[in-house]
Image (cartoon, rainbow, N blue to C red; front, side, top):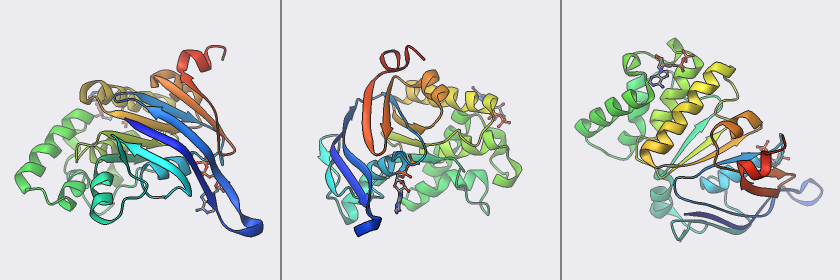
Length: 232
Ligand code: ADP
Ligand code: ADP
């Protein structure tokens, strides 16, 4: 359902020209959890920004559900963006909004009704296990709880794809485990496709179905977790 075809991206010009991604191709099936692993600077964030339409590849195509999204503009681009949820290392919650209002924001931007928003936020609060935190502000929550809010917000507009950019890197091992379990539950229950970017092998081993390793902007290998990591 998601395909990258020969995607390349360079930054800068002349002497400063840097090839961040070089001829990357792979497919991601509906319901799959793919882990992309690589060292710092390998090109992981650039790759996720190309899938998320924040960055336009210099070459190649990103195809989601048979639509080439690389050339989209305006309304069509916004429509596609709404179908992709994203979570980050530092949660990126709005400090002046309550937990409820943080989760509601994407639905407000999409023009949904108050009733629809309230019902959906309540459902999401339950799903991520923080129903008792609705009226709190982000500052009063632990890191794990903040990431649960971010996950709920990412799911607000029923995306078909969830992008996780180093989503557990700021969390301790026990909290990391609980967040990974939540992502797994969401994958199973909502049949949502998940793309996880990480430098942590453990994250990939614990929940990913398949794994791709990138190094210096190149895709070194992609396969099932058993195939790639069996000897580690
Ligand atoms: P990773 O997420 O694996 O750490 P990135 O995708 O952030 O890797 O970066 C890949 C390469 O591209 C790095 O060498 C980085 O310095 C460079 N890079 C990333 N973003 C930019 C940018 N906006 N401008 C210039 N160079 C960038
Ligand atoms: P913390 O962020 O405090 O380190 P967690 O992120 O593990 O802890 O949990 C945050 C909240 O989610 C807690 O209120 C906890 O009771 C609840 N919780 C944890 N795991 C689950 C789960 N699998 N299902 C539902 N609720 C959960």
